[in-house]
Length: 218
Length: 244
Ligand SMILES: Nc1ncnc2c1ncn2[C@@H]1O[C@H](COP(=O)(O)OP(=O)(O)OP(=O)(O)O)[C@@H](O)[C@H]1O
Ligand SMILES: [Mg+2]
Image (cartoon, rainbow over all chains, first blue to last red; front, side, top):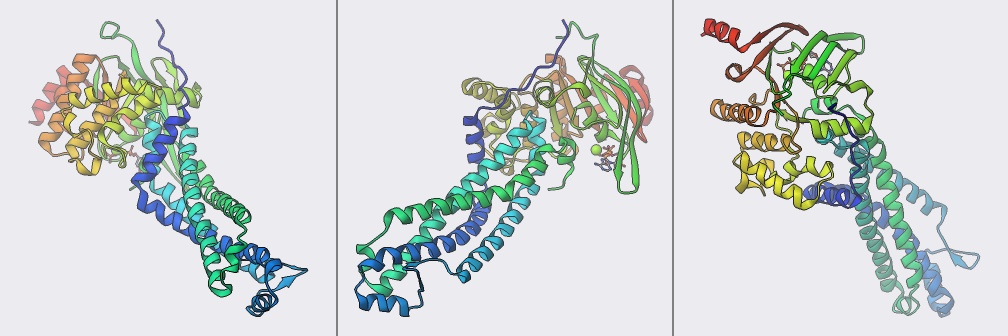
């Protein structure tokens, strides 16, 4: 009888989901800080676009004195609709850039901190793909949570601000569908940011020889 | 298992390992030849920096040699793909480290069952076996505790239980008693000896610990990345006797 080597099974997604969820829960505080960065950036983006959506819904139904009030509040009308100004787009780009750098930094640290853990997992029989899945899933959870919280916050603040400024007419012509759409794509944006940050460090960590990963000090 | 004790579980042929750091080169292993038979209890001794951990990583397929070959159960490790390597690390070898290396965010039972989850066992199977193993190392009642809530000796016992999860043919231990006090270290050594006797597991342990010598079948002395000498237990008694 010749002893042979078999092939390691790929872990079912249910197990990967469970393990990554527990890992995230155990590091809740750490990951909430990462998530907070996402919340802020996404809230800002969602706020900006939610304001214009609300104004566009309100405008056709607004009496002329309210229209005057809106324009005198500093909101500019282009060809009959409100939309992002070049200044808005600059601010959004800038805030996203700052957020992206923050996220990459946070994720890079999170992965580096866990080199030893990754080395151990590989000693126990983890495949490279498992390590990548682990980090990608954690990033997805953070993206979902940060995105949902951030876009909800942005839309809420936009609605409340306009309600205070222009009264209940804002609620009467509430563009619920459009706001839901804004919330959806900004959550997607959060996910994209979160994944951008984690992919490279996770790939580096997964490919490392376990011996090297185990050598790193904790 | 003990019956076919004649075959080599581990065989190293001219293993060289060079670490390059910029301009500098460190020759950690300078051509190691070594054959370890199934069921043996081997201690690897040598001064700090002599290459014990590097050798440990070679035997455990945790790193690639610069040149030379490593055979585990007469299979050339360099010929294995990623999936086969993972299988080997998961099923054939159990690792024990000086720094325990438990997953900090997992409980004792989660740590012990992890290799079995990787091996594709069902939940019922791995939970039962996990509790059995924790019982074996005397920690059944602490199964819900995480490593920070356990003492060093207890953590190392969890690590021993984890190393046994998939009934490996080889247990590799890199200074398993290095971070433990005398009595706790002795407990771990007794546990390892027990395993090698009862289960026929091959134990390969790098160590500074003289107590390890008494339980070893053979001692491999490493110096400057080379095997200095290999001593059997019989001869050992004499040389240790001289020291004492
Ligand atoms: N990843 C690495 N990069 C560079 N040099 C390394 C690396 N790993 C080991 N070395 C060097 O190789 C030599 C042998 O190291 P090794 O860790 O194997 O020694 P050791 O016998 O285990 O020592 P100790 O008893 O202190 O644990 C040392 O000179 C060390 O500096
Ligand atoms: Mg060492």
